Structures are given as structure tokens and as C-alpha cells.
Length: 148
Image 1 (cartoon, rainbow, N blue to C red):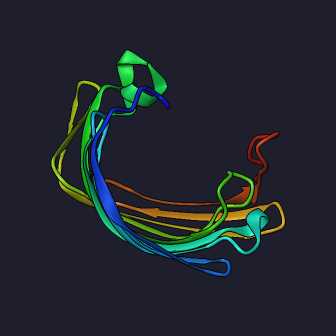
Image 2 (image 1 turned 180 degrees about the vertical axis):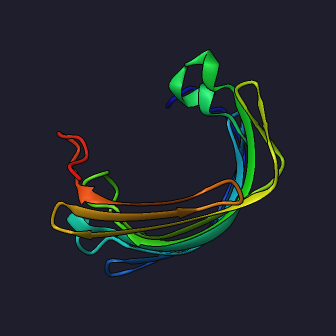
């Protein structure tokens, strides 16, 4: 799938009704990653997750097949949220970017903290990094653009 060649994987998944406790690792041609945490799938329309981990050598180009997205991203993450599509995602998403490359750009170490709140189609997004702080609020769904 997606041209992923997995050279090594391991860990554990413990299923208890709709809850999954996990501790997984993967080494592949597009990413080396380790994650630990919980996922609740009891309501497939409202999946929630609390995951921490690390990823290195993430190459977006290998997934998208777009050469301009060639990357070598390395970061730690701590995500606590719900939803899997742009229309229903919400939560706290913390990424600690380590020295990385994206396209022809070198990315320095920086924390990235995003908070996404929603009430119906009303979205509030807060994004804080060492480069910029962005706050946005408006009505959005995947079939439209922002309405301020």
C-alpha cells in the first residue's frame, strides 16, 4: 500500500471492547516510528485517540508521489483528540520538530502546538510555533472554504 516497504515492525495491541491499548514500532522506506497510547473505536464515526511517540525519516513524497514534497522529517508527538476527517477533527496536537528537511527547505527545531475546537461547523484553530502564532475562527466544512 502506498509503496511502503516495511523492513521491521513490532509491538502489542490489546483490544478491550472498543478500546485499543497500543505500543507499536515500524521501520520502513517512508518512516521509522514508535507510538504508545490508546484509541477508542467504539463509535466509528467519532474515533478518539491519546497517542505519544516519535517519527524519523518521514518522506511525504513517498505517499503523495509528488517530487516537490520530498522530505526527511523527524519529530516527537503528543496528540489527544478525536475525528479522522477535516470535518470532525478536534483536540490538542503537539509536535516537537527536530532538525528536518522539506522540499528544498531546512527546518530548525521548533515546537508546534495546535488546538482545534469545533461546535457544529464553527471551527476555532490555534497554532503556535517559534515562527508564528495563528488564531482562526469561522465556519468550515470540507465542501466549502472559510467563512469569517
